Length: 330
Ligand code: ADP
Ligand code: TRP
Image (tube, rainbow, N blue to C red; front, side, top):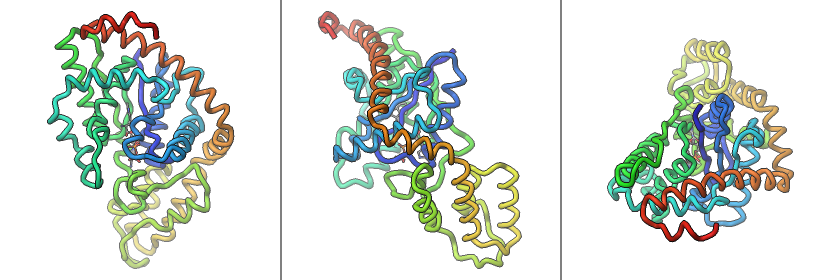
């Protein structure tokens, strides 16, 4: 019996990559364990990119509604907003004091993100330490995430190991569970689908908009009659991520035979997205329209998460020699 934990940043509306790479597999893994999973909305992490309070609030509700629409059961699992458990920032500080500077400076994700920014904040730099705190605060063991988070998981294990060697065995070393099947899903411009590139497909939102975005997917200029390479085509890759295997085999055949145009492939892609997520799209609209209930669900989750967080922090403070703080009432 293992504790599953994962978080999704509220840095935008969740997209197909988030659903296939994170939300759906996390729910499946969570449901497969007897123990409740810890699933949260990483709004503190989102502060590294979002500075508009209205937008942050909107995104947080959009992410919450997406999890619930995708079938997360908030009665069984602990579903909460990261910032509702302020203990996580306290643990992040303790961990940061054991984190070697070069480990953060060399992280791919930091190098990549900072290369695209005019201004680089300390928060962006210490992002992996807050992520380690998210995981270690709740003694989580199985962490389902996309491949792009692998290095962050290694950093978490390194920090936990350093803590245990310095102060005694307090933390379990978590294990990343990576989605092999979807790998890194491409966005409509062929790069990794990501909120930060504005190349996403929002499969739970408005269908007309979905169709418009699918029509904009970048393809090469191979004429309709010529054979096409499915492996290098974004439309095919997206189709293959959702369609049943026999339909994928059929589309592969059409690509390699020729006489099949990209616009036909895009129509097929739209249809498969429309059907596959019909139930979730309806549930999403309902949750999104009722923020009062959403807020109640999140508050109940936060209470459960905090109860656990307070226990871990008491142990940590004792281990590192901050005895006095233990006596203050929380
Ligand atoms: P974004 O890149 O859009 O900001 P996040 O970094 O918030 O997305 O990712 C949330 C989760 O979704 C992570 O576990 C991540 O690995 C997964 N994920 C994000 N984009 C993709 C993608 N294009 N393909 C597969 N998984 C993805
Ligand atoms: N950094 C993760 C992402 O961008 C989100 C995240 C924050 C997370 N804290 C976490 C994922 C803890 C797993 C566990 O995808």
